[in-house]
Image 1 (spheres, helix red, strand yellow):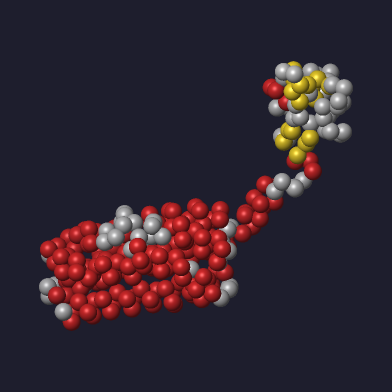
Image 2 (tube, helix red, strand yellow; image 1 turned 90 degrees about the horizontal axis):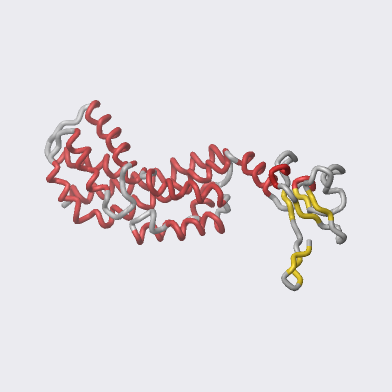
Length: 264
């Protein structure tokens, strides 16, 4: 029983060292802002991930925290977080590594440098394939234990405590996704600014043309049959294929229907 207690303590210590030191240093190195303010802003999402033991189930709350609390661009968070909920399982990798070494130790199986490297590599690879559901890591442990010739039957020892340990490592998985999104936003800031300026409705006057407004037509448009001028000053294109010869434009047409007849 004491061995299981030390195992739980090791998992919790590793998770919080990763969250409070490594993640914060990574955030500060790339973004140069207070990382603990970002960490505290994700508290509702962290609590939800702990309660549900599933990164995917906590996604709605995580999206809201990223948009309203820590102000990460939605174009980044909507792309990074769903992918991270599938492949970014750093808490799961930590758990599988420690649990595999724990089972090897209680069976007096010596682990050299080669076996420890195998545990790290297989745990990382297996965590990528982990489903975002509770206790999925216990199934992945069979792969790692088989790689180091440890008895797979001893995975059953962890069933009684995994309900708690799973919640701890899920918070790590969720926070890893959020910090990754913040770093990606910082690295993509220039591209996001260019995209926002080109997509804004009030951008360049040349990017939007009101068809029929003064100055919006070429002198030879009517002769080429592109438009049909009317008395009210509005026009309708006659042959759309020929319009592709012109520069790309946003065209606005005004059409009035009176007594079933179209007036343009």
